[in-house]
Image (cartoon, rainbow over all chains, first blue to last red; front, side, top):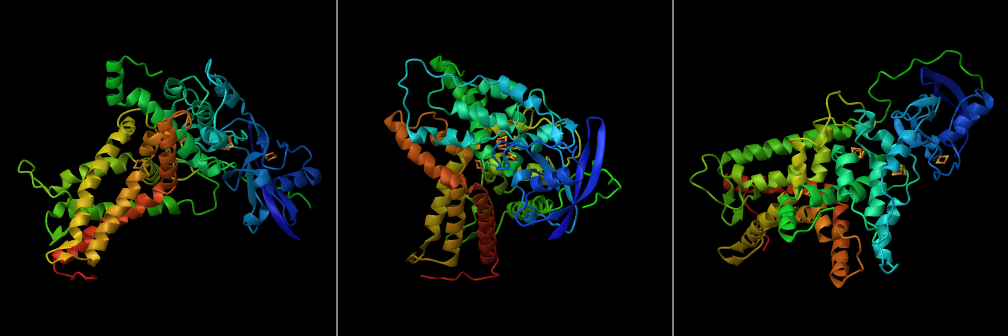
Length: 246
Length: 249
Ligand code: SF4
Ligand code: SF4
Ligand code: FES
Ligand code: FES
């Protein structure tokens, strides 16, 4: 059995520091196992949020050696254990205690999105190919790793006027639904700030559900926003035909 | 398992805690785009050695010499492809990361300054990408004509190494163009229901094919850039008499 050293953030909203802990490493262990071991043996007051240990509840998001990841999906045999493993809370949200952060802002953003609104008097029937795209988006486990890594939030602190990748995914899941009757392009442009996204794809890189956030949600939504708000040819065509964009 | 007593200094001040070679990708992109960009700029400025018999360098295609244009025609000819590449969703990612450090890599700090993404001028113009697609698609007509010419020798149909180099350049440019995100949107991505009408059903088929190509858009972006550069180098060396064409057929 090898021994690994973990440097775990301990602290709260006022501040804190990394504390070292030694952990015996066994085959198949993930970072969350190590954190539980530290809790059991050295620091019973270490705060960590988790539920499933199966990469499905989205609770155990943290930064392991600087990479935003689910602790329960990060195997120790994938990390260089000859150096200390640094475990910190996700950086874009305020720390409550130790590894637990306050992600409430995300739920507030979510409330701004008009939910699925079915068409009236349309036959309640669709085919698999109509729903394939939406099903990818429905895999989201709301771990908020994409929100955490997005540089618009993380580096530039744009939280008002920007919704973040998780909510572009949510909008895509209703906008592309064959039965949905609303148009949310004005919301995307003005209130959700899709223009702040410079499609640098970090959200896609960290998504534990492998949702192609940028290619399949954000870029198609940007194109829909262009259709309704930026394309001068379509604008002229709309003026001539008397149609409205949204 | 004793807990080590002393606290470890906080690493908050560092730009990142990442230990992997996160800098490798932005540095490679900066070097790749820098070297190829400089070469193509140099080639465009030459205004010579771009044709050898039936071979025309893609940098100078279509071959025009407008009298009102005082410098090398390549700087005019390359405007549509340049518009296409600079507003391309993949290249945007590449240069925002490699040159603007916005961000250089994921979870790595950025030099702090006002960030407005693609909300304000000039980057709001990225929204015009679809118009560059129309131009680029139109440009393919000229480039395929060059391919046709590259197989047509004085003696009739033939295949030289140059024919294949020019075919590779136009072929990869075609793949790059057809895998464009705006095109993917136009052919079917904009539809909410793929099964509702006969035309939507056929557009779904096209959209699926474009989606498969789109998954490799980054690859096509790079190989087409290499292929165009290689085609110019080959034709240029032939025209300068440095090498001789290899006739295969
Ligand atoms: S692609 Fe856009 S939304 Fe995703 S992390 Fe980058 S800037 Fe944020
Ligand atoms: S989109 Fe992916 S990274 Fe973002 S919250 Fe959902 S599962 Fe997590
Ligand atoms: S504990 Fe549920 S995702 Fe990690
Ligand atoms: S050419 Fe790259 S997205 Fe259009």
